[in-house]
Image (tube, rainbow, N blue to C red; front, side, top):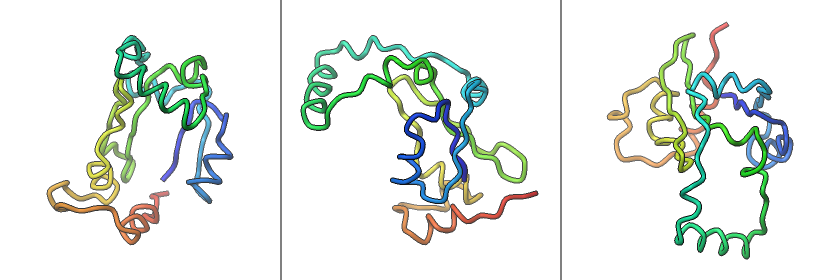
Length: 138
């Protein structure tokens, strides 16, 4: 599995924290996001009172960063594309509320199984290992 990001800001920290040994590519031209539709996200919903309350709460607990709001590279929605044997088998376009889709649907696509075969499961380390160790076609 490979991750594609529009910028390399924070990439090494991400790799060190959650993706050790994984591949991460920088797509400066944002061709990946454009392939997913390239829609800019609208931030009007951030003005809703309940959102503002949560933002203030999170800021107090975790600190604040404006990089996701101000950086041009974070203002175009992305998503997930899964290729298997050179064919696209799964696409999910990130929504304006940053929904990145169902983990179960993504796992099914990576494993090449229908979602119905996965049943009511949670991802176990062996399933994660199977999904991450699938050999790529040359």
